[in-house]
Amino acid sequence: MSVTQVQNPIRPRDRAVAWAKMWRFHFVPLSLSAGLVGMTAPSAGATTASVVVGLLFCIFGYGVGVVINDWFDRKADAVNAPDRPFVAGLINPHAGLALTLSLSGILLLVAVVVAPALAIWSAIAIAGHLVYTWTKGIPMVGNLANGVDMSLFTVLGAVAVRPDAGWLDIPATTWFQTALVAVVLSGFCLVGYFKDIEGDRLAGYRTLPVAVGTRTSSLVALIFPPVALGVAAVGALAGPERGAYAQAAFWLLLVASGLAFTRSLVNLIQAPEARAYEALLWFTRATTLFVLSLGALHRPTFFLVAAVPMMLYLELTLRATHSSRQA
Image (tube, rainbow, N blue to C red; front, side, top):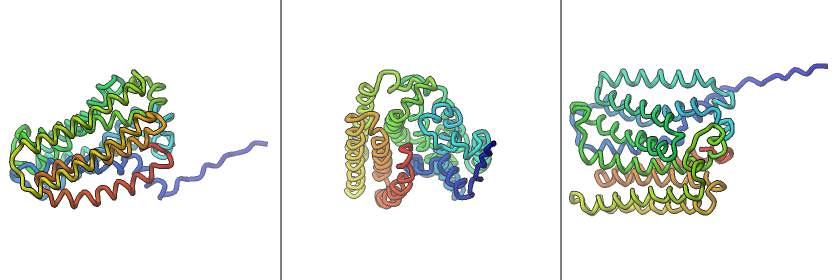
């Protein structure tokens, strides 16, 4: 007697959840906060269209990167994150990648019309996703490449409000903000590697935890937050005079991020693999607060108010990752 297995069709709701998982919408605050900070740059012909297109790139840009990464990482994800849509059979990997790149291409074409500099930097950011994919297996190089690539959301925000400026005509303050964002996001990427050691090793990725072990790697991860926090603090003290309100908003968010970074790194040092997921969640919260603090120096009310829904969104969406312990 033969037994025929009948596979239940995927419900529309489950399909929608799978697409949301594929694009990792819970990480939107990382890219959106960076873009909003970039938008504090002095305006140069900003239009509603240029700002909206810039915001769309910052909202969906992180998702484009992870879809490209997940397409290449299917072998590792089969071990590290078997519930991810590409390896769980919920979304055809080629279809998911094709749709994502097609939507990105449409948005790029719109950007060419409304803000050519935005199109140029968006194309550079997408190319950066590929650079990260090719360098992920090189210890430290991969997470640094990813940090620099994701920091370009700050540049995207700046060029979105400066469509009349040249694509390289970017204020020094924006480059300073971008460098600080690159530091914390490089650390974010490194912390994320600790939960993926088994699959990365199987796939041949020599990430830092795979190459030198969790103990040494966790000590390296300690470097990124103090550097970013320290440089940001010195920059606020030594930079142009800000009002007391802006200074207070900056220090409030900076101290809050420092406390969250501390919580993340304590988890990582105490149990690099067992608490890697908790360390990543706290690093995500800390990074978002840190980036918002950079904007608070320029527009304190906006960034203080924006911090509330952004952090609530993080908490609500990150809950969905608890069962799999994969963010």
